[in-house]
Length: 306
Image 1 (cartoon, rainbow, N blue to C red):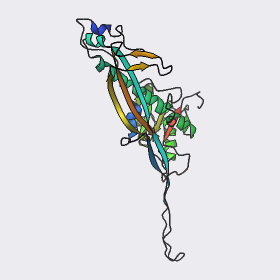
Image 2: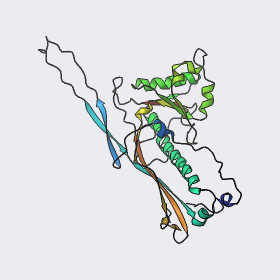
Image 3: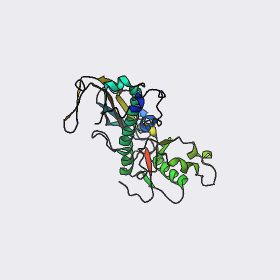
Image 4: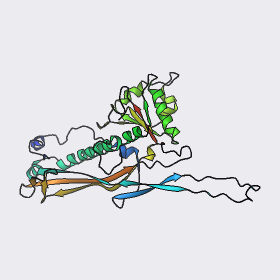
């Protein structure tokens, strides 16, 4: 892993420079802003009790069973949130920190947080680079349970309705639509079936979010819709920073020593975050089948399912 070199920060060391760095907007994780956060984890695995069987109520029949009350039961299955660690180490020469007129760490930290957000979204939504102990990504899960609908020639309004119907048939109410930033233009041009603006309809009132951190795979999904409260995540350790000055940093693949901080007059910022997520998907009054799922995806035209 390459460290920050003098060339990388040359513009910060010159005299008479503006004490500001102009850079792009920091993009945060959509998964962590739209999914429901559970209380912090106290271990590396949390067991979720998920309702698997609903109780049944009966009218008391005085004639056929002497007024005895019927017996019913409720059952719970279990799912687990497995905690995984996300981490990075950023090494830098001490003299670069000393010579710079700007707080380099203050500029590095938000970019690390952005990188974490991208990694989290990619793993949770598409399963890309996910830890082995995590469940499948949201889009692959939607496809595997058959909750994917095809784009049609009837227009985006009709296609979103079809996707919402998939969610509603599973007994969930849609409270969000998520797509890539390229979806914004399609919404601006979208009319309902009577030719009226979208904001006069139920679909227009649903919360819309657009992922602008470069992660959204528009070749796999045009958009996701569903009950985003049904996707939950849990923090074991929020982002923590530790400044190292005596450590040896090795290549994680080969074990080769890349930096000896004390010998090389370097310091390194170690950033760690631990979290996990799950979709409990309990039974509900509308749907007790195994095919229920609280999300649906709109598949782009001409794309084969995963």
